[in-house]
Length: 326
Image 1: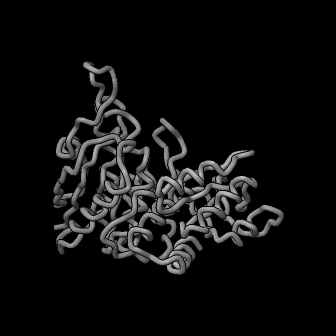
Image 2: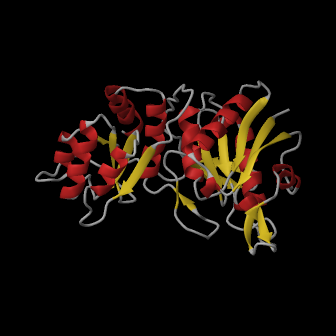
Image 3: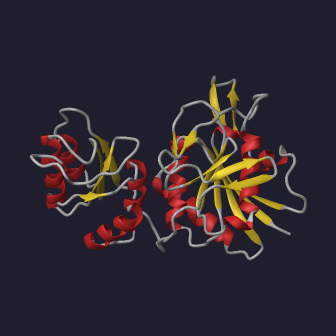
């Protein structure tokens, strides 16, 4: 008998309107979410673990790591085929990538949630959760790592991002495309994700900041972050990795005191590459910043939190970013 462990953390899938406060809050437990399901495969054993019940906007990097550790622990049981995580959509892609980087098992970890409340008649949560459980129980998905299952599609944690604030088809994988579809009882696989290389770490570093550049940005953020004791910075730059003169000054100041600075693009598709001079990306690379390929800023931040938390030296960070981002 196949067994799937559902780790429940809250989010819209577990939320209802609170008449006392006049707002939406996560109040539904994982056991109730699972009890609402229909049409799962016969003989499937489901165990529910309630980790917390929060909107994912309230979670931090330590929470995401705790969640990944819980998934890894559950997957050690030989009778467990996979893990499903019910999670808010706001930061789901971040927690999923944390699991991708730190869960050692090759069994699938499938994140899912909802865009509509648990009390709405056309809620999408039950359909998404049922699909995620099917994926977690499918032996063909061993080695696929962490994924997001949403609106009858499933995506690799490295590539997927939330692209709409409220529609049920909220997640896309841009250039790389979805891994496949869940069509009722059928799982259709269109591509396989890149080979995994998880890190064995005991902690992650929460003091990693992310800044998105805009025209004319000065060095103030970088100096303030350095002085506040951050342990690393990710910069969403222009285009291929270009920055303002003020940002270049700030990056140099941070690298000079040993802070790792990762460079990504604020563009939703494409890679950063140090090719422009006269204050462009080539000067950013010469300043000591590390170019992070086609990783998004928020994914690069997760990666840097793992590497700094592991105590990686600068050359080890460069090598690891190259391996994950290229």
